[in-house]
Amino acid sequence: MSPAAPSVAPLRLVQVGAGSMGRAWLNVIAANPDTELVGLVDLDLDGATAALAAAPAGLAAGDVVVGTDLVAVARETGATAVVDVAVPTAHHAITTAALFAGLDVLGEKPVTETVAEALSLVAATQVTGRRVVVSQSRRYLREAFQLREAARALGQAGTLAVDFYKAPHFGGFREHMPQPLIVDMAIHQFDLARFLLDADPVAVYAESFNPPWSWFDGDASAIATFEMSDGARFSYGGSWCAPGLETSWNGAWRLSAERGSATWDGDRLPVVEGQEPVDLTDVADPGRELVGSLAAFVAGLRGAPVMCEVADNVLSLAMVEAAVASAGTGQRVAIDDVLERAYADALAAEQRDDVRAALLSWPSVREGLGRANRGQP
Image (cartoon, rainbow, N blue to C red; front, top):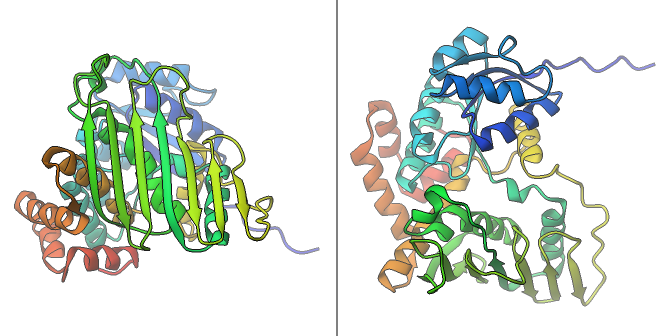
């Protein structure tokens, strides 16, 4: 009989944020046997305690340290990693503090409010040797992995298109944002396009507008076409004020490639029609959405490859900034121009000398991101 594999202690986590999304993460953490929630941080201590009380058994204030200071709670509990579910405006400060306290971070999208702040975090990972992974949770669907497998089997892509049409009445901040669809939602589809094509954005032309019947203050509809690094074009069309015949929250996709085509309604098995049969039955299930993100983060800290590290995810956020810039100017916008402007802004705003020195060491933004993706200082 072979000896039993040594047991691995659960990853001790502090979560930052106890709002509605924070409560969803509490459930996911509680259900994962490889993680243990030891701390919950929120400026509203009563709200954090209430969130724990509503969480699964075992996540109670008596078992989890509640506080307002991430670093203090992490030190008190012996945590080694953070799940950041705070509002986007706080992501840069929270993640920077965590990295320099020796903690790895799994953060909700967007990784930061701006590409400039994201570049600062990339440099901070190089200085500290810690990791920041972004929970682009809509990659974590078996059907998305199946569509990517189909894309590989069908050869060179010509076009990848997604339609996204929903009519949510959120209330709150989203209904007052200047660009609610592109900024708050489209990053999911933009990032998923990079995943499906295994290609990066080169440039975009975008238009945004607000239909007369919209209940949003800002532009709730948009159309964008991206040139991708493999020569394909990725087209996005969407609206958040489109009642009737709504798509999945993942969108409705169509891929046209050299050896056939594939469609995916965002929920069910992709449909593939190619020159040769494409078998998708053996594609593994990565775990659904937040569950998959957390499992991949834990596996990554234990040595497995992991998607969406911050240096890679910068390009998904850059797609958002580029689309907003194009919609505002009516001009085609190059991704490298967005990166260069963000780099200058990052240097101007950086508060830490060591992080600024890391940024200054990059021969170019693309090379700096490449070094960070390879784990190089």
